[in-house]
Length: 212
Image (cartoon, rainbow, N blue to C red; front, top):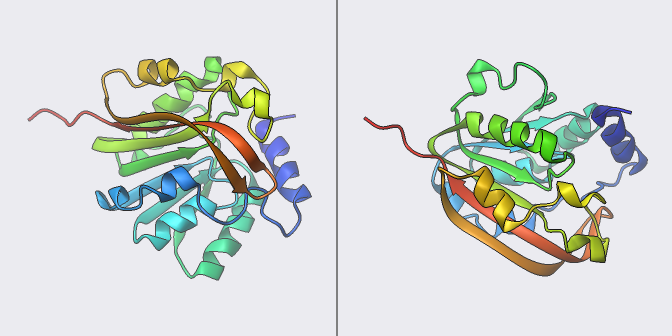
């Protein structure tokens, strides 16, 4: 079963409920003031829209990429209910030829919240696509789980190799300015998909500016 089928089934099985809730991820929301440094934001693997819609509510011009048609339809409903505009793209960001020219070096913020559905063999490609879409001087914001999350079992992948450590992220963003890299534990409540004590990691990394 491919990723589109896997995720569409999960979102469909949630019915009218939102699998990860409708409120933004807390790590992202706590950085609302920082997000005003820029106007163009992209949410990758956006799911049912909780983060992209919230970004639009902050006044940003938001694009969202999501592989599941079911999730995109639910995200459109959420955006309409909140009366905000989001450009939703149903696409596989890992597909050959991505990102398209019009999305390259376009965004001040590229946001990836719990996008650990790929292992190391695809993670470099995933991050590379995100880097390509970030403009010089722009930033990538990531929230993920650390390997200790397997002890809690309150969300996220069951494969330890999919999880982030500080060293993994430092290596992945070597050459970028790591403005924030924090590992912590917190009780989270994000729909039925993420609920309970969680082992978390958050990153903000800034892309080098082009030299004059």
